[in-house]
Length: 356
Image 1 (cartoon, one colour):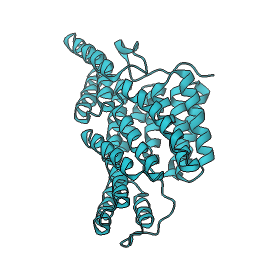
Image 2 (tube, one colour):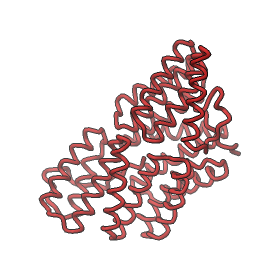
Image 3 (cartoon, one colour):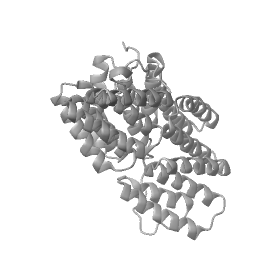
Image 4 (cartoon, one colour):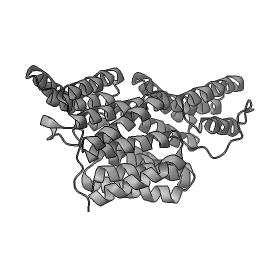
């Protein structure tokens, strides 16, 4: 039903690269082709090669380099009059903006990318851009607005037999079910996405699916050992492919699993590690979520209650500024869990934990 996963963002002379190519290899090959295209005065090829350079930098957590690269790719595509390449560059820029927590900019760039993709007749970049819009809304907790879009994109991906996008859509839908407490459905969808990714040799998608399964196994079943095994398997892939952001989120999830198991000192160490990784790549959402886990772990280890309350209050403001709609619920739940007065925050409801 599904073919082997491919990476449409590796274009021009780089189409031979695999979806599983090491990001350092992608960066080296992309940079070489980009320089060759610039020397030859071929802006279209420069745009396509520059897209791979931008994506490699982004996934390696080098956000400033990624920002320069996608903009250069867009300028080259515009000089070449290549509308589809312009759309791909905007998609990369929008994805980077979401990674950096600039959700308004992300939506604007991704919508422009979708529009240009349609105008340029490239259904793949249009689909990727709409998927980016859906993921942006999901991360912000706006499930009602993006749930139908996720389902629509899943149906389109299944119809085309496109494994990588099917896996992405399944994982997004699974995360929404997990965050709203429907753990059985979430587990089934993460399991399906892991199976499809494995058959299609999509190692990145498989690693994210394993992370989702670990989360559900931990929160639903209390099976700490199995959850940690799944995360270790995913981490091996993240390290092999140099997936810096995915690796940091893996470490944060390992902290979550250990925290739920009452292993607070170990959880603290993992949250500290994830926090340093997110700070290095300037990813504010992951940084704030790691800080929240760290604050809870330190509180369990005897930190002064007033200090904990002050940090939770600051985190509430930080999360809200980032644009996470459910941030007040997340922090209110932490106040309640730790038995600290909630300082006027809304009454806690089951909080959605942002996935990636």
